Length: 101
Image 1 (cartoon, rainbow, N blue to C red):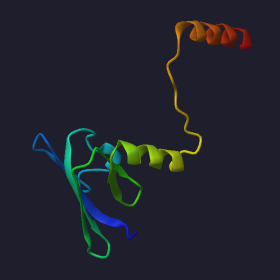
Image 2 (image 1 turned 180 degrees about the horizontal axis):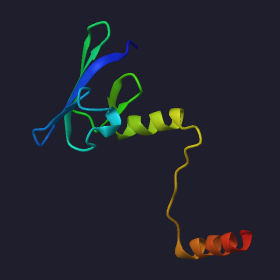
Image 3 (image 1 turned 135 degrees about the horizontal axis):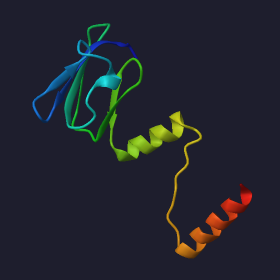
Image 4 (image 1 turned 45 degrees about the vertical axis):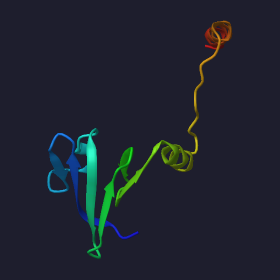
């Protein structure tokens, strides 16, 4: 994909944050309504109506919880998921972990 030359984020409190204001990492996290990015080939991309947005280093992408999990499994190959269990099993694991130290 062609890289973004500039971008702007609109928030639900009426504020905005753009590439002129700082890096994607500095942008507020919550309340995004839309992100527009202008690519170096002058194409405009409009991202809106999604559960999350992320910066790839060159472009903005958007998705929902299901796509987030798929993306995480590809980009973070060592990603593991936790689980709750019965108290008795948890106590066994804790006792074993203390021994292992």
